[in-house]
Image (tube, rainbow, N blue to C red; front, side):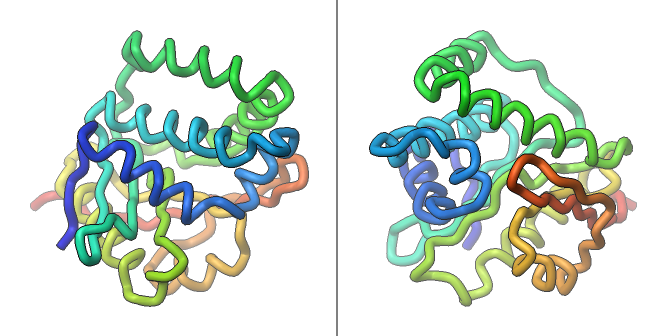
Length: 202
């Protein structure tokens, strides 16, 4: 069963995404200078991404197995919402804690990713992570399908959009119905932007 998560589950959500993204190319790229503080900085970075959705009441959903959260998907709704003051403070702390080098890499990556997003209204699936030991159970597909349902129920959204920096992910997303709409180089990364149109409510 897919759950909607709130601030009460924040620490569990962050832990699940840290497990799923520990060795992901974007995290290694952004946090390349973290050295012995990599695990701490990873939790701070992912924690900020989680907070940016929770504080705006955007979708943070997931699946449990034997009471443990094992898969999480979160993203942005079609209509932008301004960052609350609390999130602006968290952003400043993140910049201070990660250091300017990491922060500049993060900003460059996000700017490049944003540039290639379609200009029509859409739900953006910002992070989709499954703990390694629970992969292969269909959890990622189920969470994508729920995001598509959310987009389809929103009369202002025309699609679900996501990006990936792992070419091994492309066949899975294409099987789910996504098509590549843009790609680019960001530092040492190659990033692909994909979109899946979702029919609006009848």
